[in-house]
Amino acid sequence: MSYASQVKKELTELKVHRQNAKAELMALIRMNGSLSIQNSQMVLNVQTESPALARRIYRLLKDFYQIESDIVVRRKMKLKKNNTYVVRLQYHVRELLANLGILEGYQLAERVPLSTFKDDLMIQSYLRGAFLAGGSVNNPQTSRYHLEIYSLYESHNDMIKEMINHFGLNARATARRSGFIVYLKEAEKIADFLQLIGATNSMLEFENIRIVRDMRNSVNRLVNCENANMDKVANAANRQVENIRLIDSRIGLSNLPEKLQAIAQTRLAHPEVSLKELGVLVPGGPISKSGVNHRLRKLNDYANKLRAPAE
Image (cartoon, rainbow, N blue to C red; front, side):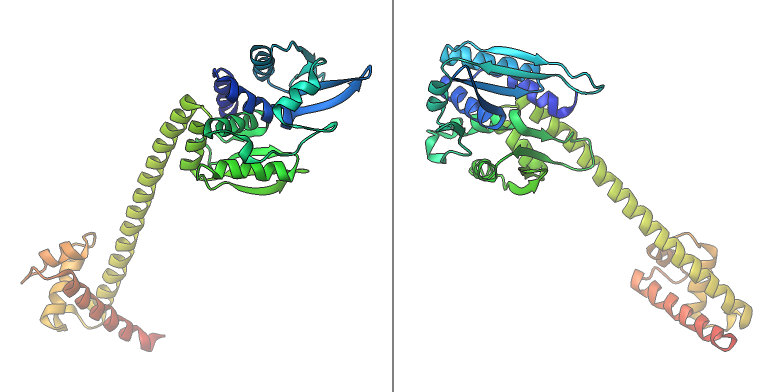
């Protein structure tokens, strides 16, 4: 089971208050519902690929509206295609949609004002329904964090964005595949959203994986940085040894000033140590790291001058 499916499974098992169930149904029907006319009467079909979600819609209608509906299974013959589950309501459709505030004439309304929702719990329930109907979230173990909700209509998409940002989550919107999406990219905001819609267990798993992953990435960055520094020190030491040997072969280290001679001989004897360690080992020391660096720079300049005629 994918992480997104796990989140939705947890959400379909939540118990809700009547008003919150109403808000959830508003989103589910608005996003996945369609109307048709059969035998001169209005028929509502709410379609999903999740049997758990189909059962939830069925229960919400029965428990809170005392309305009986049917679940129709449309089987896909092609491989790797999920079955489609349709919750079909043939009676009291107009009354239900009027009560949910999503019927305008014979069409489903694209959005409703936020003022329709009495409190934050209703907004959270609407967002839960919206995520169940058209949401997805990446597994936190993947390379990037991403949660989105797809809407067919831009105005409804904007409404969901307003709802999410009502809780300060910095959601953004864009066009996508003949529709629109609201999305979150920040890990902390995704965790907050999962908590907001009631997916507490999934949120805790998300946070645990994220913390371990981020810690591992931090350790890797530190190790890479340390390795890079070690390589830098080793390369610098190799250049210093090469330059000292050039000076020795051309004029002899004994002809250098006493301080340069001492640092040159110490570097040859200890090519692997850092500048700080070299300052402790040099005869007449210890000397500071900047002092060691100053002397080695003089040796490098001297070696470059010796190379110049040959170039």
